[in-house]
Length: 129
Image 1: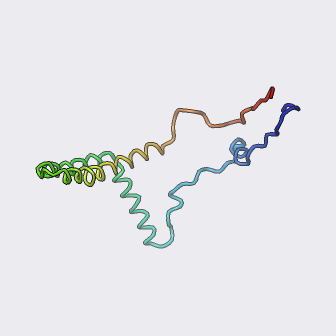
Image 2 (image 1 turned 135 degrees about the vertical axis):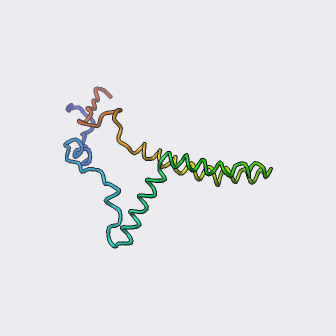
Image 3 (image 1 turned 180 degrees about the horizontal axis):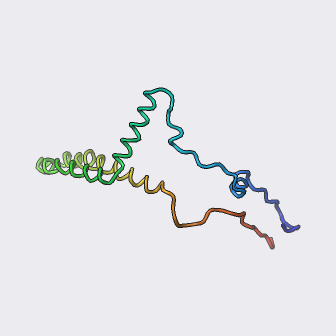
């Protein structure tokens, strides 16, 4: 670096390990699930199965159909409270639950395009003050 620099750059230890390629892999959620007794393993297994089942667009479509079955009754009640209750309690909770899970799964997938990972330290230069 320049002899007239006003600071000395010292990279963070995590930055050094990332650049050197010796950084550990990210933690996987599945490795953090309980693995002790039979009940804990079953609860973890069942929760993952339900989440994977509910977190599909087909489940969102099925929930939308189920919610729409009760829509005519809510409309025929001629009550704003009943209609608002139907929208918030029936439609939004049923359908958006699955859609949000699907969205989270899509966002959690690794990107195939976009900015490249950091492979070297950027060079900072101070020519004048």
